[in-house]
Structure formats: C-alpha cells, structure tokens
Length: 210
Image (tube, rainbow, N blue to C red; front, side):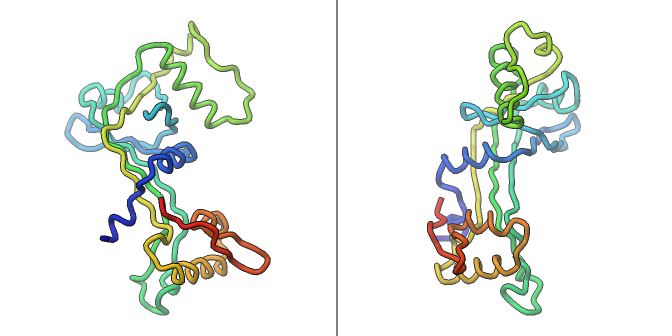
C-alpha cells in the first residue's frame, strides 16, 4: 500500500468526531477577480453539513452568492517531531504529527428561520457547553441581523499522521521520544497514537488505524 493510502482517514465516524472537537475551520471562496479568499471561521458540523454565522454583508457572502463552490478545511497539529528524533544533524528529518479534513462542496445562505435557529443553537452548544444562554426561538429579531452559511459537502477527505504507517516497535520508540520531550501536547498526542502513560512508562492500548 502506498504511504498516501495509509494516511487517509477511512472512518467517517472519526472525521465527524474530529470536526465536532475542532474550533476553527477555514472557508475558501472565489472572489470577483478569480482569486481564492480564505477566512478562519467558527463552525458546527450538523447533519453532515457545516454551519457558520456571519455579518449579513461582506466579501465572502458576495463570493458565495456569485459562485457557490467552496472549500472548507480543518486541521490540528498534534506534535512537531524535531529532526534529531531521526538524525543528529539532518534538518530535513523534521516532521509533524497531524489530523486534517478537507471538504469540497456547495455553500448556501440559509433562508428559513427554522434552519437558522438549528445552526445558531448548535454553534452555541458547541462553543459554550457550560450554558448560561437562552436557545434561540422563532420570531427572534436577531435572526434578521445575522447570516448563516451552510456548506453542503460533495467530497470529504481526511488525512492523519499519528504513527500508523510505522511498525509497532518504531512507533513505540517514537512515542517514548515524545514522552521524553514532554511538550504541552505530548500526553494528548500519545493518547491519540494509542498509548497510555503509566507509572512504569508507556503502554500501547490501541492500534491507531482509522
């Protein structure tokens, strides 16, 4: 199997889980001169579509109205792997563990209040899980003051690199180096890689195959 195939996320459930956890995505639309415009956005993944809120006027809305085809991308850098993990002096050996999802699809401006309410309430639920807000209801004036963008995917592809392309022994050695480096993200990265940190060191508890 080619390396590229081993980096592809095969599990749609894993893609949905990733999109539900990440806080920033990037929407790419085409401006009036044919150039891509890329903007970071908060988003919610609901019923297999992306929902975002926006001002009622702006360049990205103009772009979407003119050309509904868009891209949407979400990524997470898990761990930078310094070159000395592999070679004492060859800087080209530096690498990164990551997860990413790229969507190609059609963007529409949501017109019906019922679907606007769905998107906006799901955004609040995602970004303010502690509550302290009143969910939107019908006939709320704010619905006329905010735009809701919906991206309907036509293609959804995920890539990840968490050591799944390596032999178990090599993956364990890499995990030990990550543990020793002890970055702020190390323990979370090791968990995603399928390792548990114990008093005795590391224990592999799961194969990182998605």
